[in-house]
Image (cartoon, rainbow, N blue to C red; front, side):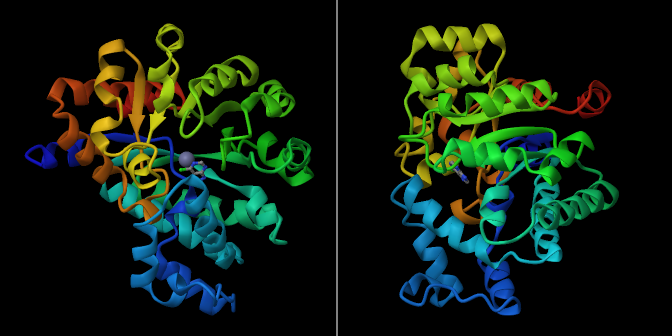
Length: 336
Ligand code: ES4
Ligand code: ZN
């Protein structure tokens, strides 16, 4: 890309990255061996780094990806494993020009395996401190709930003593909703989101990735979210798009993810130009960088190649990424 140097230097904010999705095949195999975790022996994909990466290049849907995502994270056991995972991501992000990162994690995917929430949080917190200290990047944690699980189970996790303690102590900035979208509409999680709002937590949810635009409307109306993760199907409802513009809601788009999971055929089909023309705020993000073939700069470059943006377009995207961040005003000023 002719603007590669420019895109690299742009001060970026990332708002849509699942730390468990930053698990590289090399860290996966290393931790599997150290923690004596047996990977599926009936799936040839796990026979080598190369075959695993080759399988990742052939995902057929979000559901197909999630199968590998949940197996992959089964190698994370000790506090230091979670620290290594997050530190690996923060180093990549910093090298790509990220100055501020708000990262998702899936506590239920770990507590369901007998790993305590405190183990997960302590590991991630250590990596955050190190990133702030050694890389100078600011970070926030967003606690995501798995929508394919029954809503009462999500609520029970939300209300666990150590989870509530992490909200009260300011370790967690907000909550999100991820995993399989189709069949699991936002309104099922209304009670949990209402409680989160009362605790002063920021709220976002994946919507309009594989699911219809009506899920975006329902996330805004029933969950009170301030951001929408993905949201590419917003273009299917022009009236709703006007409402999103009026409210200033930011979408956290993930172009390479959308292509790899076959939500769109190519990055050209991600409605970047429509969003820019309509005044929809969005940031550009990596989602699950170790699974989708690229970190944030690769996503910026892919968008540039597909949509041929101007320097002014990029400056606007970066401005919106700062405005849509959940850091304090002082930090926003430093980022500007
Ligand atoms: C995810 Cl791409 C995507 N969509 C929904 N949930 C997820 N969890 C991790 N990556
Ligand atoms: Zn996601």
